[in-house]
Amino acid sequence: MLYEAIAVALVVFLTVGGQELLGFTMLGRPIVIAPLVGLLLGDLQTGLLVGAALETIFMGVVNIGGAAAAEPGLASALATAFAIKLGGGTEYAIRLALPLGIIGLQIKQLLYIAVVAPLSVKFDDYAKAGNAKAYTRLHFGIWGLNWGIYSLIPFFAILFGAKATESALKLIPEVIMHGLSVAGNLLTAVGMAMLLKMLWDNKIAAYFFLGFIVIAYLKVPLIAVSALAIIIAVIVAQNDMTLKTLKDKIGHGVKSLGQKSTDPKQQEVDDFYA
Image (cartoon, rainbow, N blue to C red):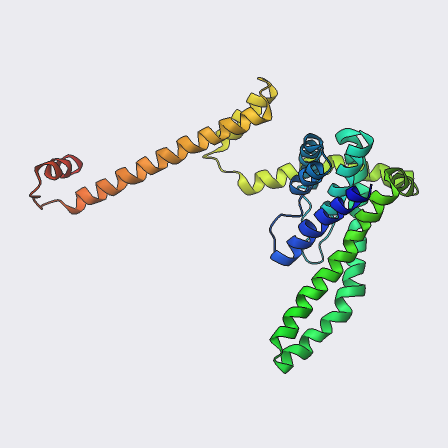
């Protein structure tokens, strides 16, 4: 039990905290966190399934500045751990993830106010004094303290047990839980719509419909579809390289108009493209 609590807390610290330290690296996404938790707890398959399921739910959740909806990192770590320990699968993980994500976000904001804000005023003093080393130490010190405290949430949640955490979540009124379930179902569609809006291009739209047909009607497994997508990407890349080479040769042929090459083979190529 202690190992599991430490493992989940460490994953949250390195991924959610690491994302805040290194920038928008996507380390704190469910598709990264859930498989890591599954690997450390000895059930990678469940971790992969839960990660994929939760990523579709939280795909449209991007917390930028004051626009914040939920904390998918903490929710993914705890939901995956509880799904593995209790054997509830992805359905159980999804049911836990939404309230955990919202609660996790509130705790995260409280830590910003209680831990980060009071210590951040020191940055101005160190900057005025030109003390770069103290400035750097404070930067990493605040980061470590803030996310170390935040990682205690999954640590104690796993240590006290999934049943205790679930009992605490049951204190939330049913009407709110129902609203969260409805929102979770909608977030999947919203996340896919946002992704399509960013990636949609009429030139490659045919591949989207091809993938839909392959999965919905031909029942091809996702791994096979991924392999097929890689093959198509390689073919497209090779065609692009061929077209680029041809374009360069044509450009070279146009520049060579009126010039006779001393190499008969090169002259033959120049005459052909001219």
